[in-house]
Amino acid sequence: MSYIGSTRRIASWIKKVGAGSPVAAGFAWSGGVVAILLTWVFVTVWYIITLLLFGVFMFPYRLIRRSHRKQEHLQKVQLATMQAMMINQQRALNEKDSPR
Image 1 (tube, rainbow, N blue to C red):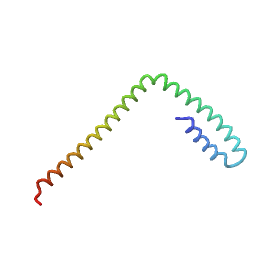
Image 2: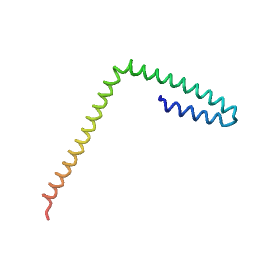
Image 3: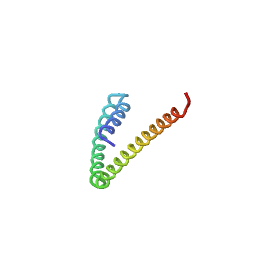
Image 4: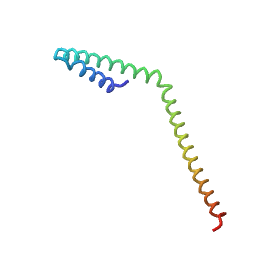
């Protein structure tokens, strides 16, 4: 739900419906303008409701999720580093123990 997305969908509908004749194009454009205005009003109300009513819960949740993703990434990096170190240690032990 966004202004640009709804406008693109309605504009593509207008082009498809209004391609037949000039009269159909006029009705399609008139209906399209009304549809865009109504959709934009709906999207604006939706954004206001979402930010005002759910914003109290949404922002802390997003911060917690971001922190969790960051911590998960750091754990994966640390695991990869530990695995690389273990492989290098095993290679060094194998080279030390193997007769030449």
